[in-house]
Length: 499
Image (cartoon, rainbow, N blue to C red; front, side, top):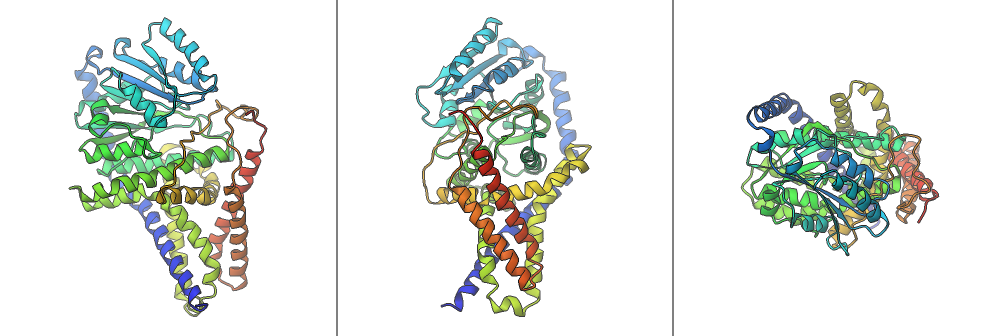
């Protein structure tokens, strides 16, 4: 049995490595699809807008309801409401719903600013629920009951839509098959810290490459929960907002597409937002997204595989919904790396370490290449921005413990509440999050991050000792990632905050 254990670890290691390789290679495929479809997509988007403004006068524009789901957002609610009230759109065709589930003084602040806006002739209503049944999905569902609009735009509390936002998105809905349009997230505080720099680059990769590639290639894509606009009928046809997953946006997106609706993406329309400034807020956000994605996969993959769509679309949808499985695979690679050293095959076959090195390179450099590609697409000074890529790599590996916990909770049907990401109204470097409410405390997950950092470091030393240099650089990445996230968690977890 003792002789078999190293080979069992070797088999697990190879399985995890091949899984990471698969997800990494898909990043290359998405970049290829993006490059192939981008020129035609931009021409098509430009023509859509030209045709709309040539044929539709403002009094023929669709009626729109804007929903603002909030929960304890005292630092940003005024900024949000004022930004939405500045949207350039005929007042008689616009309705704003503030869907407030708050339990603190956010409601008082919100009602004060809403009253001022209403006095200016803006159709804005305040809806406060006495409970949080269904969390965000429940609030959106409640608001939809009385929504007057044919279209429904949704903005989370940390977003600041530009005045021209609605004018830019409505042309797409001339096509009656379009059920939802997602716009690209911008960043108002990306230069606040190395952490926000790294997050911003990760967000850019998702929107500039992944979302665009999926939309332009006819693959299933998703509403990101905010900075998008739905056709009300599409929501209703798909079964409405449902709260049985933590990612109600992803779930509705797949149900709508399985019902025959098309979802699309407009990368040229940017909606600025506040990036989380503390690692523990980011971990909470990632935990919710990871768990919700796997919950959505369990809920919808059966219907997806039985549907009459192409095999390529099904494969892409599977990789999309299960993407967060990369994190438990990362942990398996780390945990089995040291036992693998005791496999004689690992020493006797020179080709084997070379194969592992190649697979690890492709798995690691796939996402990295995509992030660099996104910076080239979006910014003229992209060369100066990619210097933050190592921090994004450390963040992506260091978050593996947190997200593996989320994946396991989803697979094991363990319930947890909807913990929203705290926003502090951070617009520039001089702004402070300390001494403010809503801080997320340090959790026991950080202890595991620390010990996995030590374990990865031990593995790195052992691989160097046995002269297995090809695998060592990747153990260095894991070591750096776990320690980076752990030390930030401790630093931000003990930051002085109000209760």
